[in-house]
Image (tube, rainbow over all chains, first blue to last red; front, side, top):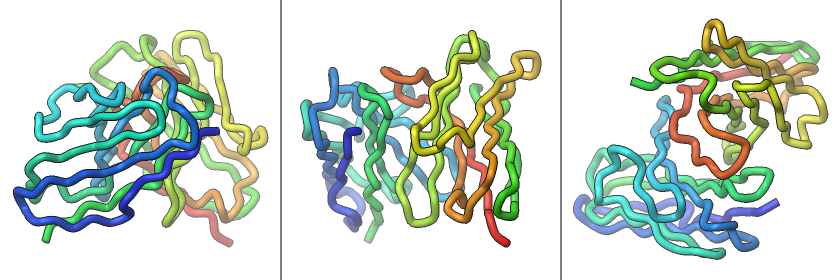
Length: 108
Length: 119
């Protein structure tokens, strides 16, 4: 199975700063079937990005995804307090689907 | 509004079974599959399996070793995940999520159901 490794594990930034989250795959992700999700405590995870770079419905353009093959990035261009959450990546092109362990994003 | 609403928290003893429900609303239930995912305390997310609501086909993660059964009731737009012979390491939050077995991101998730296995 494809192992996804996210870095950093924890990130703390100030409002207005740019956050860059990484997701590295142990083998190439088929056809960029890579998604990013936002997960706040006690809530359902929320799809942010699919197909490595397409924003899901209703997601602000502050969130962007890029990458291909084994290296993928989620960028949040201008952090807001409401962005505090765990962000995780998922590959859905090879069975079984697998997830990264998550990056915990905090605001200073 | 599209929603998946899950059943409440459960506490079970080792060796028992648990059945978690996931009720869909706001869309045609038979048009999408349902996946189940769990997250043990301090761990990452683990895909458990998928069921086609349209025809009942299933695909389970190998490590569940036949302990899980996923079903749906199209009359009530509800999906179920039954896990048998519970062990302490089955303690986790269980989520349902809309999507097919592959090639679909999960666009809608349930709120999660905490299952605690303890003697």
